[in-house]
Length: 243
Image (cartoon, rainbow, N blue to C red):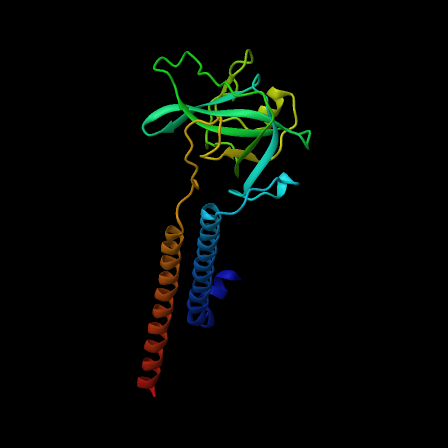
């Protein structure tokens, strides 16, 4: 029945145009989606560059990436974590993750204090000393570094501190610490004390990439419209000749 319908004169006459219009709508919707993605990237870049004041979060789950936050409390220097295999300027090193206990909340905040290089042998762990006094940690709301594929477990050794991990998740660090964690990581500000190398930047392609994709989708939609128009004009001219 379907085969007969496809072979009918009505289907052969109108089905290609219907399919073409559907493709036009699809390409336009994809182009608009890319424009929305570009707008999101522009908003995130503006937020990253904005010189907004720091504020102490009341609900960490509501934080957006690169919100400027500050927390008053104390570093837990006896339980620090080194995230391994972090490249920077052609070298491999660690991100230093130090738990921070806020004075107004039971859940710990993970503070990424920045990057430090490995020693040449990779066997000696660096000195992560930070003062035990109460202090204010200021920086940007962020997340732990992520990787698409991770071989094995995050923590290969569960011994002394600091512990070396390979791209751990918040849940894995929470299990190692035996403490609840806030859902956002504090990326320590570049001008803050107790930090290492810090150059926080949005880890993403710029909005121009999405504008380029949007142009491609709109160009494909325009091409289909031109093809449909050409066929309609050809059919109209054929009808004029017949009459």
